[in-house]
Amino acid sequence: MQSEFNDPLWRTVLSGAQMLFVAFGALVLMPLITGLDPNVALFTAGLGTLLFQLVTGRQVPVFLASSFAFITPIILAKGQFGLAETMGGVMAAGFVYTFLGLAVKIKGTGFIDRLLPPVVIGPVVISIGLAMAPIAANMAMGKAGDGAELIPYRTAILISMSALLTTLVVAVFGRGMLRLVPIIAGVLVGFGMAQLLGVTDFSKVASAPWLALPHFTAPAFNLQAILFIVPVALAPAIEHIGGVIAVGSVTGRDYLRTPGLHRTLLGDGLATTAAGLFGGPPNTTYAEVTGAVMLTRNYNPKIMTWAAVFAVSLAFIGKFGALLQSIPVPVMGGILCLLFGSIAAVGLNTLIRHQVDLGQPRNLVIVSVTLVFGIGGVLIGTGTGAGDFGLKGIALCAIVAIALNLLLPKAQA
Image 1 (tube, helix red, strand yellow):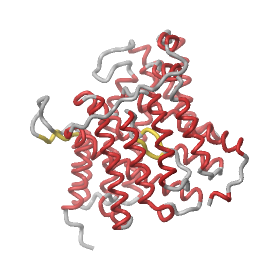
Image 2: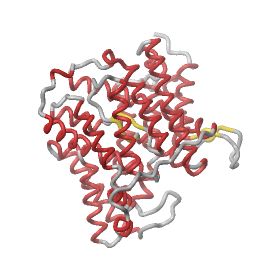
Image 3: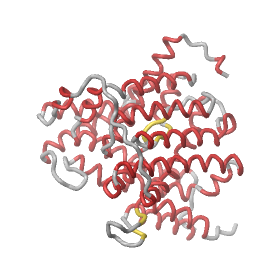
Image 4: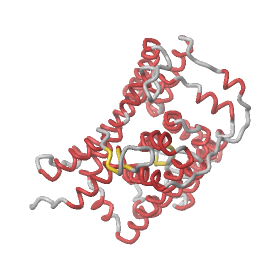
C-alpha cells in the first residue's frame, strides 16, 4: 500500500511537523488542566501513535493524543486516590479498548452498535462537556479548581475573554491551515495579554534545563481507582470509531475493513495503556489532524510517524515544558469555555443526526437519567467517607446509560 506514496523525504518530514502543530494545542491543554506533565503527554502521544501504526501496519493516517473525556475523572481520581493510582486506572481503561477490539473481531461491528447506540452515546458525550463547564468558568475567572482566587477577577476576565474571542474568531473566520489551529492562536493572544497585565512568571523557565527527562510516573493499581476511571473509556472508544470513519471518508478507504476496527481499537488501547505506564493522559484520535489531512490532501501515514518522532523529541526539552506550565490559568479557562461547550454540542448533534425520538418514553428515560447522573453529581456506592467506594459523574452515567439501553424494552414498530 505504501508504494503509492512517493513524496520526497523533506516534504514528508515537513508535513509531519505541520500535523504536530495542528494537534499541539489540544494535546498539551489536557495535561495542563489536569496537572499532568505536558512533556510526558508529548512523549506518550508520540509513543502511542507509533504503537498504533505498528498494530495497524501503518495504514491509517491518524495521530493519537490526549483525550478530553478523561479530564474530570483524572482530576477527581488524583485528589481521591493519588497520581500513581490514577495512572493504574488509565492503563486499565486501555484494556477496555482491547476488549472492545476482541469483541468486534468475534462479533463484528454490529456489537458496538447494539451496545452503544446514539441514544447512549449522545447524553454521555453531553455530560462530558457540561460536567466540565464549572472547571472552565472557574479558570476563566482566575480561580483554582477548588474556587481559590489565583488572579484578581478583572485581570483574569480580560485575559480569558481575549483568549476566547481569538479562538472563536479563528475557528469561524480562519482560512486554510489557520482555521485548524484556533487553540494555539487563543493561547498566543491570551499569553500576550497576560504579559501586558503583568501576571506571567518565567522564573521556572529560566531555571529549567534545556534537556531533561520528562517526569514519568509509575502506575499503582487500586481497584476503586480502576472502577472509577474505566467506564469513561466507552465514550472515547466511540470517538475513536467516529475518527476512523471520518479519516476513511477523507481518504476514500474503508479502515473498518482494512486494517479492521479490531486492529484500530487494539492500537488505541495499547496507546492508552502505554500512556498510563509512563504517567501521561489517555490517548484518542484527533479530529484536528483529520481536518488537516483533508485540507492538505496528504494521505501518507508516514507523516504521522514523523509527527510522533517530533512529539517524542520535544518531550525531552525541559525549558519547553516549563514554558507550557507558565501559561496563566485564565488563558486556558477562556479557551475551555468554547471547548467544553463544543463537546456537549457534539453529543447533542449525535441525537439530532440519528433522529433519536425523545417522544418515546424509553429514549426519554435513558437521556434524562444519564444527563442528571452525569452532571448532577449523583454518587452510588458504599458511602461518602474517605475509605468508601462509589461511582459518580461520567463513569456512573456511562454505565447507567448502557444498562438502561440493554434492559428497557424497545418500542414496538
